[in-house]
Image (tube, rainbow, N blue to C red; front, side):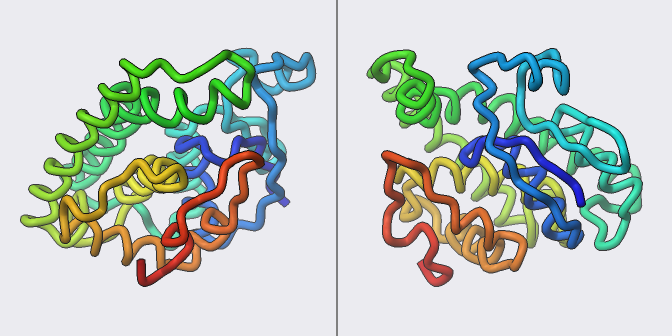
Length: 221
């Protein structure tokens, strides 16, 4: 069985968890307090980051690389299009969320509200929180534009792009930082994706000291 070292609300870990679940790969989840820089964990990944997965007798790090490996070694069901243009678009949107959205929103909201408390780094920086609350509106509007032109974020088929976006938004939804009333099309997209069996374990996450809103695990919002 695969073993995933993760943090429950990490969007990068959630992206890998969604890919594993969609491909029906059994995995043992082990919560990792990466900020403590435990020597055993540093041997698994000297970068001291999660996720890290033990799979096929190998230890692998970096969520993008892990998801690409899963796609190449377990191609069914596919989370990447067959054509180069489609694969490019999926990778572009994955990068949008893991880089731009993460820097402008996730790091400003989730990390300030949750990570600082969990790691003992102090109190949220109100300027960062306000900046993240402003920025998420722009990103939801961009998602609206994409979904007005496509069935899914990167095209007509659900892909890793949708999982990357849903991983970030689900983490933020746990702490009530997504205004689902801003865009009906984004809300409908999220309802579809969180209704998939792959989402079950994520919706069951419970973080000590933080209670999700009632709609978090409600498939009908």
